[in-house]
Amino acid sequence: MQIEELIGLRVNIDDVLYMPSLEAPSDRPHPFVYFVTIQNESDEPVTIRGRKWVLSQDNGEKVIVEGDGVVGQFPRLEVGADFSYNSYHVIGESSSVEGAFFGETEEGRAVFAKIPPFDLNVPNWA
Image (cartoon, rainbow, N blue to C red; front, top):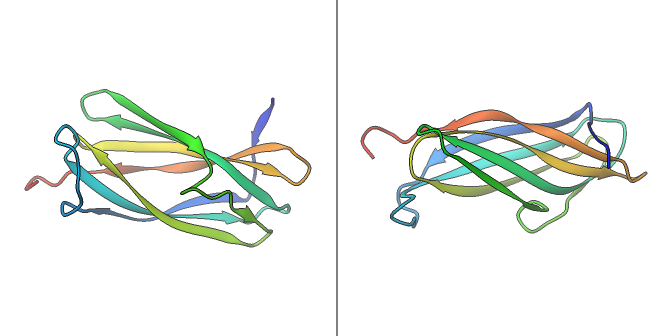
C-alpha cells in the first residue's frame, strides 16, 4: 500500500510539561504530558487511523510507540477542522521525539502527517 504525505494535514505540539507528580516506574521515572493538535487544512476530509512516535534517548536507545487511533479514538477531520488531545509518556532520560499520524481519505487513500520533532528534557533538579 502506497502512503503519501497529505499537504495541509498538520500536527502542532502545543505544549510539553514535565510532571514529576505523576506515577512512573523506577526504570522510567520522568513523566511528561504533551498537548497535540492535528489540523486538516487540506482539501479533503481525513480519518486518523494510527500513529507512530520514535523517542531517541540521549544514551542512543530508541523507543518506538505505535498503535491504532489517537487516545482510543479515530477522529474524522473535515476540511478546516482540528482535533486536540493530551497524553503522556514516561522516560528514563532526556529524549527527542518525532513520528507521524496516519490517516485515510474518503477515497481510501493512505496519508500521513509528520509530527514536528520536539524534546522531552529532564530538568537538572529531577
